[in-house]
Image (cartoon, rainbow over the protein chains, first blue to last red):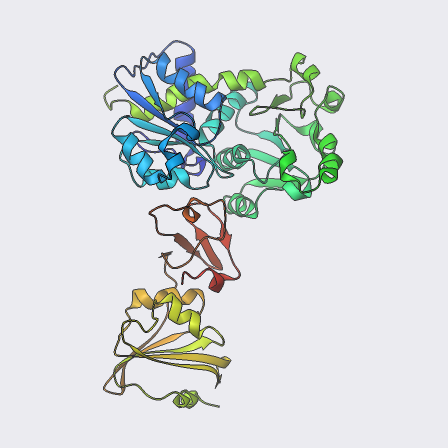
Length: 303
Length: 153
């Protein structure tokens, strides 16, 4: 992966994942202090982002580097109709690597075909979000381990790019994956096809009830109201996928509850006070994981 | 009935005969190999011709142009039974079946409105060819049915 691109989690071998997570752990423990002095990271966010963008910025600055930020689409040349291919070719001349978030699937792949600097996919439409996956895996490894893992992934599985990326990456490990969603928000068939091709252990459910008690990790995503053509249909399902302290009464004591954030109302605030809640720690893990990733993608070979 | 029924379309002197095309796909065959007559080729099309192998088939004869294997292999997406005859001086010089290519580029458009290739970008569409369909190399969308409707025209 060194000096390459990170476009999807599909491209990551188990060794790649472990390399990033081990390096992130060493950085978090203060055992390694990578330096990006004199280097610039280009931030191209064609969609709003708080955590991903700020954690990349933090990761770069904590290593002594800096960022150049395209800013909002409304204030950029994109507003004038500039293509993505042209935008990244311009930024290639400014920055040593590019972090790209874009509303269209495949945008990072396209960008990578036009530039020679590393391209990191920070989310492409309903497609992939591999750096989120790396911090998710880091968090899971810290709390439950990545082998003999039983994980429930719940919510909007159809459009949730974090879910797709995580599911692909978990095929590299001994994980039983349970997908819980309304029928209308099930995993895309392409993703299910790929998971089966990889020999993954996959089961789909419409209710959490039958599976909660056996889970090591419950990964919750937002059921997106805007995805439902009918408000009544949304109201029917939304309550069934809300996690409360009562819901978790049937869970194992060591269940880890994760969420890529932002949440709206799918996890009750009272859950924050339980030992299950890991989502804020998960968000914080974005910094060491992205520091490790930048070091592997941008660092010198002799470091 | 024999394949002699292809004589319903006149013989060509030099060029390519694309035979055993699934009935109704002849015009898609022309679209997929990029023949629209603008280069001056003489093109004959027979549709719904009786066939022993397919019951009904289409046949396309292109005068004055020998199609390469790369050009015709993309036909396997819509005409997997097609046979390609290269004709010289009224004689069949070579005859072969189409093979499925690994990828097809700038032939089909992606049906996923969320795919970056549907934007105004300077990029050709590209699909990996699966055993039973095609898959966009950019967004990952798999298409198993309705492939002719995706042909760029």
